[in-house]
Length: 410
Image (tube, rainbow, N blue to C red):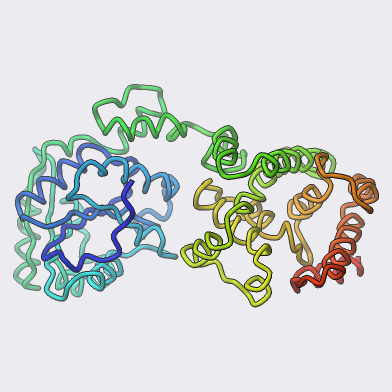
């Protein structure tokens, strides 16, 4: 897959194809190519939405799934690009922010064409900063055959007259295909072939998208089987064996101290706790910069402390874990912290006592305490870990000291 272009300085004109792309289909692709041909733009940039303001109450498939499906659908067309600028931007997504960010990536005299459904033209004055938005780019209103055009043409005329804006109209037969229809068909096991590229259809089937899931199950997007397959590629054999041991041990502890949901979360957090452990130092630092993982002074000097904090971000972006409790259990499984949640304690302890560990002084005591009282086990393991680190003249993270003080007071 092509890496995302960071600027478009060589482009005199660009068309912007925004949308949730949930999933992307041939209607989107035909529209993009039709606009490219009619307006002779240099590139069409597909921008999957992040958190669109008009869909805050609707379920939208995970950002990474929608981004990857869009990449798969467009990768064979050299005139198409896919941008992450909306899905990587925190908070609610507004079109004006996207246009302004894109303009900063382009030459000053670039001409932008924003492709939108004809229905959106009726609502455009309710968007954020509509007058500024209309001054920054041309709008291309697209619709399927049979659309009632009279009101649309009236509104286009009013906007043109009031704001001197350029709004164009196009009719695209392929827009009769809809993402909502594809989702419904997929959820019922009906065929979706020929409605979207084969690569996207294969992706939907591979990850079981648009199926009905039980609402009380822990929400993560990759199956456990797929997680394990990815981990086998990312970890050494020894690390993978350790990972499986931690996951199994975490489930056993969750059976004693938690609920069925805790057992599910423990399994996932155990699997992914070391997902960034085998990254070379240079790769850890590069990903921390790319994923905006903050590094404190201790982590910069003691680089093996980076992997749990980076691992939480890797679990979110590459394994599509959304559950904050799971992510925090990964984040603090090495340092610990004061007042940890049940899951955080379970992963911290399971990492220390998992059955594949070679024997060392204090291991059996930690295992014994783990099945009596988690807080006692936390205190024991923290004391042993801190003593081990100090004996070898290595740096201690302040979170570990804070955690020990906390569990001494318990």
